[in-house]
Length: 152
Image (cartoon, rainbow, N blue to C red; front, side):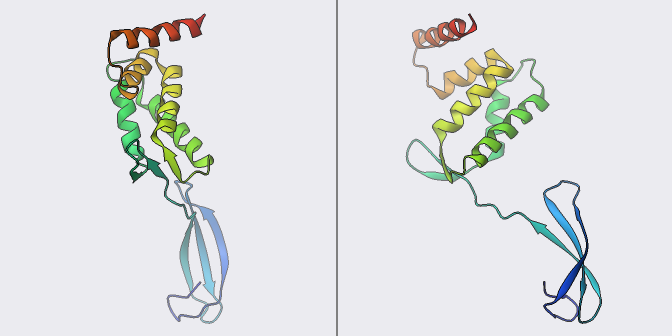
């Protein structure tokens, strides 16, 4: 690490500790040439996750977009913001752990529905009706029948 005072390349780590958010490491360093101390932060380098849309285009994964779609599905339901955030965290973690850099929207949609089904069935049906593009009442009723069958 280059010293900000004398530009020497050699330093030693005096102290390391995680930051409050736990996503970075704060390091106190001492320059071996001038003995002055300085602070550095170490972060994990991440490769951006791309979403492969139905039309074949790619866009960067947007956590806020996922959160907003789930909030919309849970609107006026007994689902807390904390529950939705936990579900979004789970989905994001699952996607990161898959090590895929291009994730199809189909996979994201299925993960959302899986999580919403556990949290609130009405929110699940709301999301599924938009996501699966229910064309008519029959399609909607088929999904409800399938849910009722799974409950038994």
